Length: 89
Image 1: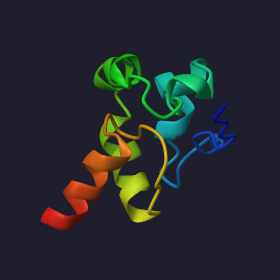
Image 2: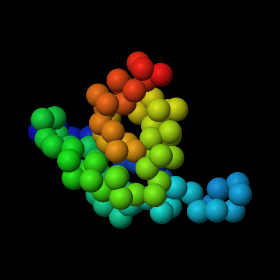
Image 3: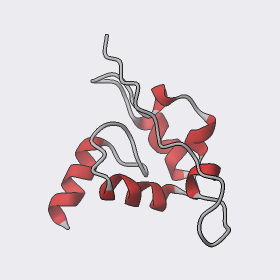
């Protein structure tokens, strides 16, 4: 059985500008990590569907790319999709 304990980063209360951080309002903060870190071969469809409805999606993807997150769904993209995006950019 594949287990991955990594979860999206802990939310911070406020950004420097006094606004709520994207992590504070992200839909993934209300869901367990299993959805975003599925076992190999499992579908990422449900995680991507939740990401598509999340206002923090762009900031999440930016974070994942800037921090070279290699596992899980971040900003609506899987590991392979983020890898392709990095190669294009």
